[in-house]
Image 1 (cartoon, rainbow, N blue to C red):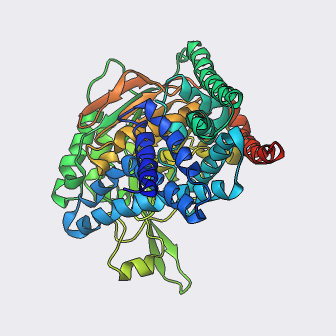
Image 2 (cartoon, rainbow, N blue to C red):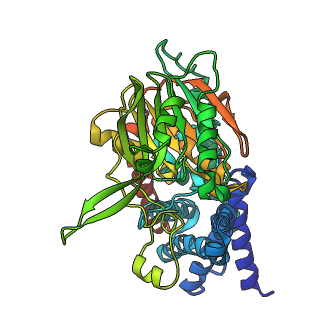
Length: 525
């Protein structure tokens, strides 16, 4: 293997190492993979720009190959229809997301930073393109580098100050600093760079430890008791028509399970029942009365459900639109009353809708939803305040990936929710790393906002999480477990700096990276 091939191999290994820092592996020394990627961008620097792009892209292929290999699992749920797309799925996912890293490397090389300032420029370029990854089209901010820290641990608390994107910049700057050993610098700049990196790492741990030392405020006496239902229904069995009654009975039986104190709120996960909710509760359906019987008087059910809505078209006819929704039911006077509906705003490309749908259909590709048509997007998020439950911000599956989603909803409504409810159908991921990573990512929304999260999935991982991103003791159901979680809703913390300022601190970090380009050139011999 020639020198150029060896450098490319190191770039790929750097991305693989960085990916291993995320759950379920949690190998934090893997973060040094970013230093390896930076070193490969500096090796043979006079080479053409396309060399930098390819090395950055290879680093991304390694990183996203480790982070998103679970993408093959959804295609295997219905092998006859979607199985042929599985190998293309992982190639397209890892290779497509790696383009952001390739362009980030290209921009880094074009800026030609000098001296130890290269570390800050590298952090700015890659963090900036990670922000773009979270926003281009619908965005897909899965496993941001700043979310490699275990949620609830000390370093993760930095998200309360600067959000996941700001924590990404800090993580990249600290982890890439050892690359200065290969920059042909004097002893003093190398020592200064490493000392600043260690100070940044110590600052992350120090702030986190001090924040976690504070006692979680006691839940008020009137805090509602919540029951999270996990029925462990495999995705391969869910959409068989003959299984509908069995699935319903599983959720209803767990809902009725005796408890020391009856829960005021019951939560069923995303798309809990394999049918359109409008049909299930329509007059004449057997499921409406059965749903009433599953609840106690005054109890609220927050159910992830697929719903249909008639919408007029330009020719005066009615068109059916489908929504992935959270529906709030309350049992009153022996009947059910709908007290709130939230329709998912951020839809999963190819999972819930097809970009360029007409072309994709002609190519024989369709989304993975078990609906006659793709889902339609709901309005921008706002807190939901169903009768009998404190104001909450729903996050349906994919929406839990997005920093600032809860903050944006609170700004539109002018009220801060008391808690976050994340209903998700992680059964699509089977027993892969996907559900464990999704739990970690969702927990960062709790840290950013200082709000507890109640998380409900059909096959795991379901949990009740406090405002520090920590799972409450005994409030977790793992992969493949059947049961319920009964817990009092944890109290919210005071609004965080991130809740007040959003991504403004992250913007300041990008400005600092831009100034580092200028500083390196001013001090150039």
